[in-house]
Image 1 (cartoon, helix red, strand yellow):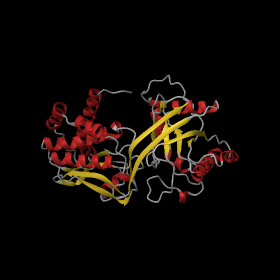
Image 2 (tube, rainbow, N blue to C red; image 1 turned 90 degrees about the vertical axis):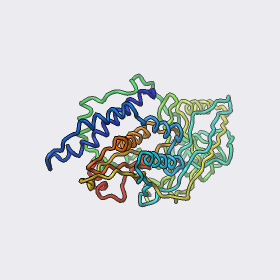
Image 3 (cartoon, one colour; image 1 turned 90 degrees about the horizontal axis):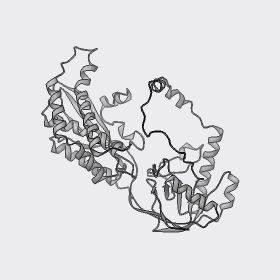
Image 4 (tube, rainbow, N blue to C red; image 1 turned 45 degrees about the vertical axis):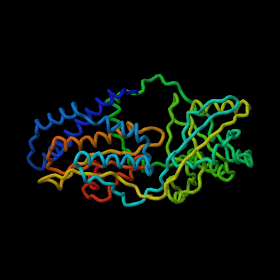
Amino acid sequence: MRFHWTDLRRILSSSLILCLIGTITAPILFSQTQQPAEKVDIEVINRIKNEELQHSQIMETVSYLTDVIGPRLTGSPGLRRAQQYAIERLREWGIANGQLEPWGRPFGRGWSLEGFTANVTAPAFSPLIAYPKAWSPATDGVVRSELVFFDVKTEGDLAKYKGKLKGKIVLFVPARPVEPNFLPPARRTSDEDLQKLAAAKFESERANFQLSSDRRARAELNYKKWQMLLDENAAVVLEPGFGDAGTVSVTGATVPAPVDAPEQRSRAWDLNAPKILPQVVVAAEQYNRIVRLVSRGLPVRLEINIDARFFDQDPMGYNVIAEIPGSDLKEEVVMIGGCLDSWHTATGATDNAAGAAVALEVMRLFKTLNLKPRRTVRIGLWSAEEQGPSGRKLRSDPFCQKNWRAGAL
């Protein structure tokens, strides 16, 4: 679904108003069973609506996070710039206690993509829609190589490639079927589907999940394929991306580990991660075309250059935390926030500059309208949302820890 900036502004402004009104009224509704209900100040709500509809700064915040700063991978300079920008904006609005709060344990290595090219040069030139995986090592300059289709269906097939992979660009898997899509890109979930989701027992199903024999065999074969590529010192590994019509979904680099050795598993950003190969994800339609060319017996050549940089100076992870102190009920905390980080292949507009901007705008409106909340209003802009919930496991606040475990935050 495509949005114009005007559409996005209207959606975010509406979300912001609901969020701020909820910030004011939620404690009132929540406390009705425990104490007399507090009066809702309609005049204040109208002031909030008028200020946001007439003088909103929400799109300026979204634009700076996405257009100016861009990707905000955890541990990267982009995320650190975004965090400092958020703290500076809070300070401009009169909230001087904004700070970077460490999680309490290290995250690992930072990473940024400094440059990238990927082209088919034979049998005919064509640029590729492709991205390196996050935390992929750089190549040693431009790699120009004939391509090898690593067509391994059984462990016995590995022997065919021994001595043939050094310095090569490798297609790791077969072509991925891309089915035609005749459905609209977005549709409302039916009441019946929502009831099924509500009744589902996700925790018990997850606890009882085990690899089937077929999946275990595939996982073991994949590990052996990766290990052979490492042993043979292949130059670059290519895989097809999820999505279609040129959309490429890219996450972190693969770190191979034996299926039955969880103690050996690590993530690409871990400080003690083992050596991995440069890895690139290609748009499925283009990947499939390359497979078809190789299957015809044609020599296919590619050139790939990954210029990536790791950051080991500060392995700690951080969140942005700030608050507006309350008055007589200041020990009670109303929490707002969202993740500030994003993946490296886009500007992270909907995931989640939009949500972070809404949370920041709530704080601005409190100060601009000189509202005096009875309860402390705290903002948290998390990092590492894309690498698990690490940043959202709040370190220092028992109230937040309790309510996070209860699902209230």
